[in-house]
Amino acid sequence: MDASIVMLGSPPTHDATQYAASLAQLLAARLLPATLAEGPAGSAAPPRLAVHCPAASADGLRPLPACEASSASGALLVLLPRPPAEQLARQAQRTLQASPLPVLVVPSPAAGRMPPRRIALAAEGEPFVVAQGLRTMHALLLTLPTRLTVLHAQRPHALYSGADALHAVQSCGLALRHLTIDACDVPAPDPAAGILAGVQQVAADLLVVPVRAHNRWGPGFAGSVTARVLAQSPVPVLLLPVNSVHEERQVA
Image (cartoon, rainbow, N blue to C red; front, side, top):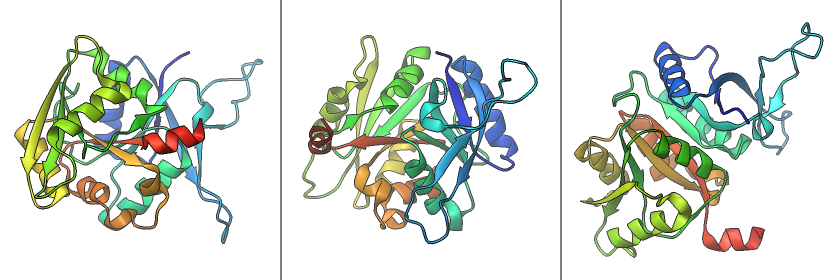
């Protein structure tokens, strides 16, 4: 199955386009344009991510219809150019709701190297389970000799420690053989500030932020740590949909 990267934006920014093209080349993936379609006015239906597959029909004349992102051939992630501040939280959350794929938000301009060699993953320490995004993370981590650092914003009297954060990442399926995983504790009274300080401290090229189901669907996303990190991160942020261990057991 061919790998692909789904790209939102109408039109996407020049920086995001360049980043998407470089990442697609790195991962040997196709770039597929997409649109985010809202449900009918007043409807509670989630938005729909329509991916436009640039393939022709059997007669070679008619383009194939748009397909859902979840069924797009080998889709790894959705790349979203970072919207203006007033639109950022809503656009990011609606994109997460439209598809189970990880969402890569690219600022303009984006700091960090391409291809990314140092990937930071923010973890608070509570165990989590990665579903569809595991394939994406493996593609990123196995393509190059990448260094993965688990960032933990150590708050006073926090329930979890940096060791808990490292264990949570190792237990969710990201502890691949021959992959170096470091841990970085950043003392900070505010989690968002701690994560951003950690990105700078480890010179990360890409930040991964796990996003739990209650955050993806809850009304408080705009004021969440994730939204604040998104708004201020100088490097691209990969929003990785995850479930708690309890949620995963309920699904099973």
